[in-house]
Amino acid sequence: MTPAALSGVRPGSHRIMNEAFYRAVTAAGRAPSAHNTQPWRWRVSNGALDLFVDHDRMREFPDPDGRLATISCGAALHHARLTLAARGWRATVTRRPDAADPTHLARLHIDGSAPVSPDTAGLARAIRLRHTDPRAVTGGPVEPAQLRTITAAFEAQRVRVAVLRPDQILQLAVATAHARNTEPADAQWHAELALWAGSDRIAGALNDLRSPIAHGEHDRAATFAVLHGCRDQDVDWLHAGEALSAGSLVAAGLGVSVLPFSAPIEHAGARETLRRAVPDLDCPYLMMRLGHHATKAIAPHTPRLTAAQNMEFPR
Image 1 (cartoon, helix red, strand yellow):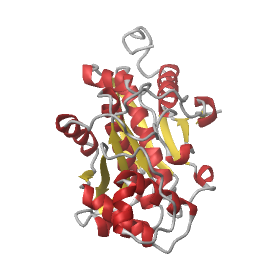
Image 2 (spheres, one colour; image 1 turned 30 degrees about the vertical axis):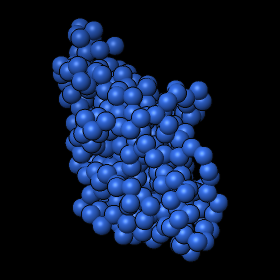
Image 3 (cartoon, rainbow, N blue to C red; image 1 turned 120 degrees about the horizontal axis):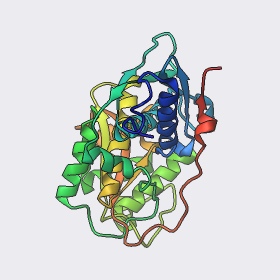
Image 4 (cartoon, one colour; image 1 turned 180 degrees about the vertical axis):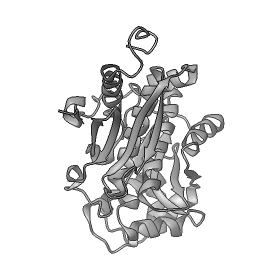
């Protein structure tokens, strides 16, 4: 139901708001998340929708300070508030509403009805189009006009975007190959970098690689970028997740795939390696690959928790 369809019901009805919140949480369940952990919980109380981070869902993955979980929650928050806006609701967002509870990341409060712009409606429709596609990029490069539009969507959420040059990708691949950390995630990250840069270029830059490099298709047609900002607190990670959502949805509408990578930020050493390779970065939040796929993905979308599994109503 939309606000217009419910004009005969009193504006403050909890039933109306609860239905709006349920639809928002359902859409939020489609947001990208680190390792598809979906580390968020929602609670309806006093006419508001509260977002909490659930660190237990990340316990099998490296996330010592909770940044990956918080970034994931930021993406879900943007999906939720976009859905409310697309259904004709004006909502206020309060980030970190309870300083005493670090798991309480945001509160959404419906203030009333509002007109829906075509851009908002189109972006909300892209929620069903967007999905993570890990295949190598085999289509043409992202056009400059498309990249500007996508970058603007990222940066509208209080983050910055640094587009990496090919030589920076190569430098990063070489640096990770020489790193002494032998964690599985780091080995996988090095393999991804080698795929990006092209195994022949890596072989020319190194005499001794610590992990095998796949030959064949690689991502030279892709564009690589880093979301970063001047601060490195949990509210900044939340904004980074909102930016990931906004930029990915705009990209999906343009037929551009956005593949986020968490390995470059999973620990302080990896973040420092990234900053050395890209000196213009401030605090890196997330690295991404943007590109076109020559064929549509045939793999099913990753499994999602239902709204009922993620949402609590007052008793």
